[in-house]
Length: 185
Image (cartoon, rainbow, N blue to C red; front, side, top):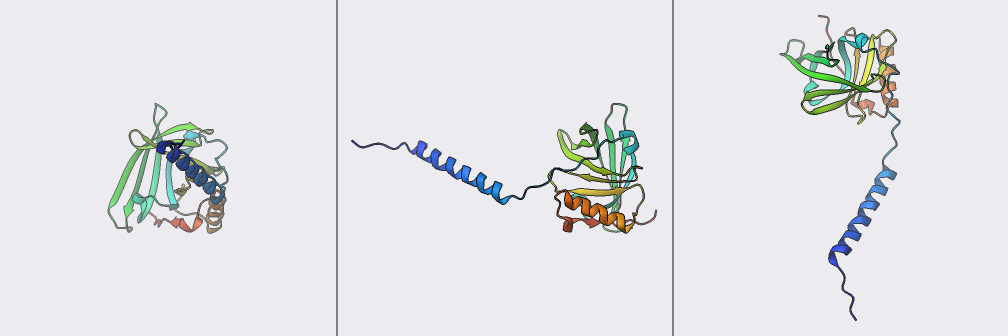
């Protein structure tokens, strides 16, 4: 008596085993990342206003940005009108401006969704804010982009180095961080 093999079942078993092996290999090879830090509590009203971008791992839109500044305004409905402006490629370059809508979604007001195009909300996490709300680090769970921002266009070098080290402790590749040229206005 000959036993017939069912090709679909055999294929499913092989594919399932391969998928399990791949997942096992990825979990072994992937370095564990620490949980992303969150500022303990954000006073949203104090966070509003102008923030100069001191350094970042830039998005495609931010490459070559000079005098970059993010402005937040709390609207009556609790959403946050966000404007990101900069000069493209030089201090005299053309002005660029982009708007988004922020939504506080949790984490003691430290986790926001940032919506540039409906219905997509980008992950935006306030990982650090100084006691006086003068300096902040905004990060993403994916560790793909990060921003060091301040109320002034410059910060002391020692503070910058401390923040870069903090970002590294969050699992970011700090070699990708770039200073954003800022010039007095």
